[in-house]
Length: 120
Length: 325
Length: 155
Image (cartoon, helix red, strand yellow):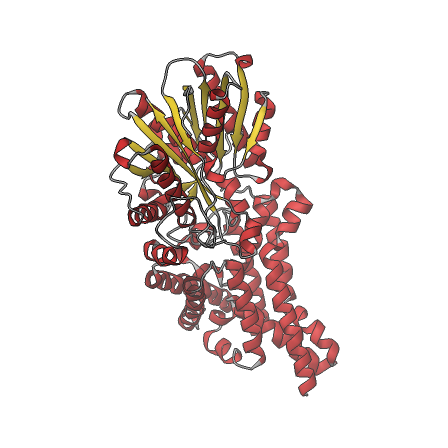
């Protein structure tokens, strides 16, 4: 139950520190949207180069929970699907591999927005 | 400009949100709301209600019949100044909508004084409002988004202030005004608006002193509204380098409203900020004789979310009005 | 813009000099403190994610399935905490530590949607769900397609 927690904490923490440095050291305002886009794209590219896989092995959730992990799953899915189905896989693989994440984000996001009132 | 028949401030009224009410000036406001909505269905409606309440407050306080008031001048921060227009719908006076960002109150006072001094009006109602939750989501990020605000950022005040100006009557008078010019020193960071507006405020003060042959010590209080702590320090420094010593009378409405412990970083901002500080705190201090001559320098950051996204810098403006007790 | 010709008197500080002055007076972000907080908050969120993965593995899911299920759970938690008005407080403290994890992605979906609820369920909530999520999906999916095509061409 408690295996891998320390590595997850360290790897996840380090990835978030990279995001913090990106926000604090770049001007003008590097917004959360920029951070998220950078991480998803960065994760997809690192995944394609085979550099993100080791991080998942070491850090577990520490590498899969940050949004770079989402990017990694996208490109990994695309490459695997290309292997099975050829060029069409490049278009289907990424979304297929991350379908649960995307769908749950849309669904839970909608649910919570409807259920709660903004507090300001 | 110096008014030959200086208009009288007949009444002033201010309404603020709960956070402002807890601040150091809390007791000087006419009314404090218990929450940000006060029964309205949206923040925008709440802001408009708040402005209407402040406007009506001034009318009631002065005890003047509505048909004696010739114009209502008001503005706010929202797109197409809906808070003011919607409040004007209920007040039902001839309405002139203003946009000067946070400088709106000073701009309204200057224009109202011109209308009265020029003989075009007997009484003029002036007001401005802002609301933290409406402004933040228009100009920055949704309030529920988990982001850190930089230390230079300012907090939009939830508040509405109004003043009733008249040609005759007893009270402090608006003796002169200086309309500022748009100055842009290329600040692009919307989280550092004080820095964007400081040169405009400094320029207006410089020109005001030059035109009237005055200096800072001629005033008991010079309040910019609202540069925040960062902008205030910058304006003081720029004026010093331009040969003007601001002394101890120079402060900022944005610095006055909140206590540093209220997590507002550089201070307050928004049309409502200078409006409530002026209509509340400053007017009160003039009435009890603590202040004899006051200059309010409203400062506005004239950008829009679109212009910022397109990488434009933030133009600033400052308008000054002088009140003699 | 900068080359305005103004009526005298004018300020003795040029826009160029003002820039240095402004930087000098603007408080710096407290980087060391922010980094430590981002590390702690981000680390804790990922550690919680790991506990959830371990739980799903213990009930018999494969590691890939468990990881996917954990991501969905974290998205749910992020959305719930945003709705309750708690996530923005975590974010104020943790900075990027709460933005980078998938819970932050979830926060970026719910926060604009909830604020624009009063503008209606289609053009308010429905459209605003994607103010931040939209760009993320656009760049993420587009990158994965490019990666897939390159992979196809190489093999």
